[in-house]
Length: 450
Image (cartoon, rainbow, N blue to C red; front, side, top):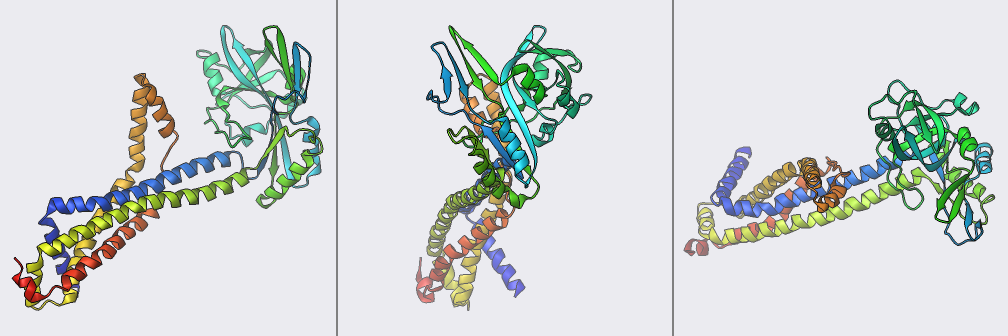
C-alpha cells in the first residue's frame, strides 16, 4: 500500500514537472492565499498586542480618575472683561473621599501636572511639571538612571525644593554636564536635581478620557512642594488679558488588590464622585481592565475579518487549480484511456489526479508559509525605507513612517497549520471534480481521442 502511494505521488510530481511554468502559475494562487492569511493574522496580532501592552502599562488592577476640562461655555468660570478663572477637575476632598471610604482601594496616588519652562544657564525647554508622590515611579513603569534617586517620603514631608528630570529633558538641559546636584529654574523657582529617569516609550491616547503622555520631557517634584510653590491657579497671559485655570489635582490613581474587585470598585468611584461634581462632569474614570477586555474582543473580530478576507484568496487559488486540472484531463484523455485499457480502475484514476492537486496545493501552502514567516522582516525593511525617505526630506516618508514605525507583526503560530490545512483541503475540494471527470471517461472513446 505504501509503495503504491509512493508511486502515485512520484507520478503526480513527474506530471506536474512536465509543465513547470503552468504548474508554478497555478500554484501562485495558493501561495499568496496562505501568505496573506498568515500575514494578515500577524498584523492583527501585532496591533492587538500593542493595544494590550498600552492598556497593561496603565495597570490591570488600577482605576485612573482624570480631570477633564469642560466645554468653554462660561458657566463654570468667574470672569471680567480682561480676566477669567476656570475652575474644574478633581479636588483634594475627592482624594480624601476615595482613599478613605472605599474598602477595596488599597492605595490612592494623587498627581498634578502643569506646563512650565525649565532653564539651566542659557538652555531652556517647555516641560510637564508633575507634582507626585514616590509611588508615581512604579505605577507608571519608570526606572531611574544610575546614581540618582526618585522622590522620597521625607521630600514630601519637608516640602523640599528637589526634582527628578526625565531623560529627554536631561539631554536638552545638560548635554555636557552631569545633571545630578545641579540647580534648574522652573518658572523662576530653583530646584536641585536628585535623579534622572531612563527613557520611556510614550503612551498612546486612550479614547477621549486620556491623552497621550510623553514621559521624556517631565520634571517631577513633591506634590506638597507644588502646592506651596505654584498654588492651585495656573496663569496664562496673553496680550492685554490673562486667564487662569484652577485645578487642585490632575489625576488620582487607585490601586485594587483583587482583580475581581476592579469593576465593582469603579462603579463605587463613579457614584462617590457624583457628590462633589453634580453640577458639571469635569472628570473621567478610566478602567484599564475594561479596556483590556474590549481589546480582546476587538482582536477576535479583527482576526476573523482579516482571516476571512485572506481566505478568499485561497478560494480563488482553488478555482484556478480546478480550471487547470480540467484542462489537464482534456489534454491527457488518451493517457487515461491507455491506463484504463491496461487494467487501471476508476479509483486509480481519481487517486492519480487528486494526488496531483494535493501536491500542487500542498507545495503552494509550504511556500506560502515560508513567505508568511518573513512578514516581520518585511516590516523591518519598510521601516528602513521610511527612515530613508525622511532623511531625504520626502514628506510622504513621514506618513509611511507613522504607519509602520509602531507596527510589529507577531506571527500567530496556530495560523501556520491552519493555513496549510486549508490549502490542502482546497486542493482536495477543487480537485475532486476534475478527478471524477477523468475517471468517468469511456476507455474506448478515450483511446480514439487525438
